[in-house]
Length: 89
Image 1 (cartoon, rainbow, N blue to C red):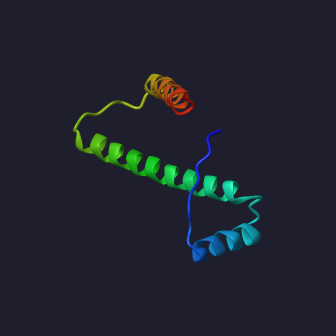
Image 2: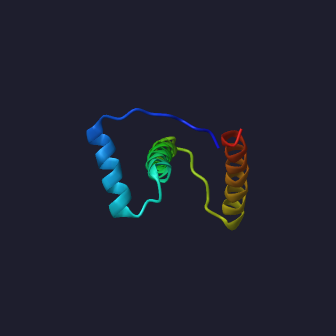
Image 3: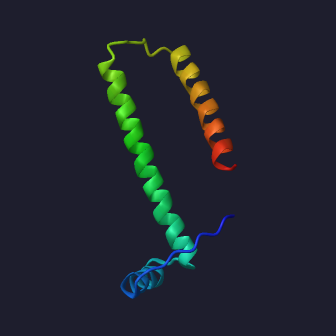
């Protein structure tokens, strides 16, 4: 796991300490990892929203057959595997 050092003004340091104490975080790293995961999820959700809107406005249609869903799940699994391998590099 990589280490990143950041500097915070005292007011933000105090805020982080309060969050740790009141929200049950074990340490500062745990708190910041949660913030980063939430930000990452928000970006992923926004990207999905944009892609869905692009798809809706593309005019192309596909019948939602069992085969379509099976193919879609297989394609998504491949993309997720590639992304997971890329992010662990």
